[in-house]
Length: 104
Image 1 (cartoon, rainbow, N blue to C red):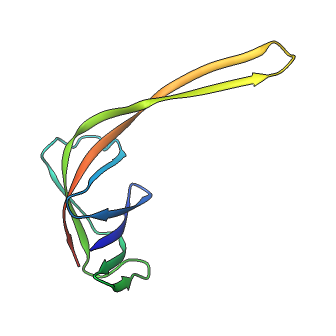
Image 2: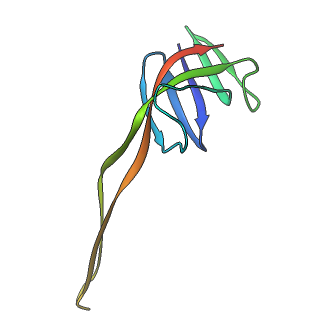
């Protein structure tokens, strides 16, 4: 069983027991349970329910495991023959979620 859910403006394919990394959710402590009700699609052993725009009565129950930083992303800009090059980088902040169950 899997579902397509919208979390913070992004769509994710989730299954029970899966770890999920989403953009940082401010003000939420580790160990907190969160329910997401914007479920767009549910596949239950071949029986597919597609929402218009969401599936009625479906929700995803998750638990916050912690907050962390992702790998460093390097941004390199260069204009050849113009003596211009610039290196920049950043690390994205993430929240780790554990999908406990899919209620459909």
